[in-house]
Image 1: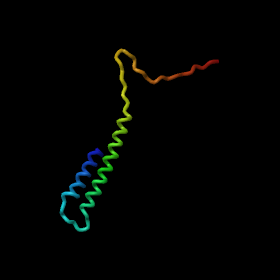
Image 2: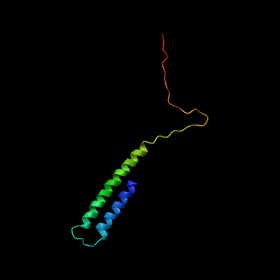
Image 3: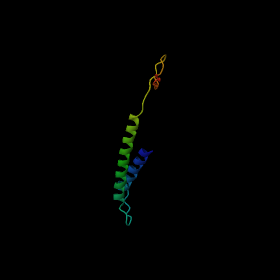
Image 4: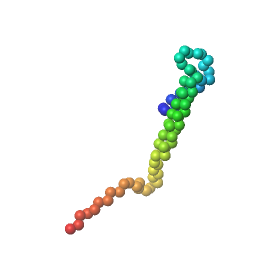
Length: 81
């Protein structure tokens, strides 16, 4: 979801900066477009970094047919007198 929003912000910013020629009193549409493109680019970088670190944390387990899967081992100590 954040990646899509970032790309949308970049697209809207590019449209405002490059395609809109209308003059609005009190608002510089070119500057607003540049700001949206910068925010979208930063959001895209952050979301891709977070996606990359999430993929690095995924663990895969391979079980070979005919063997017993390894499980956590609990070690208990017997009481001696």
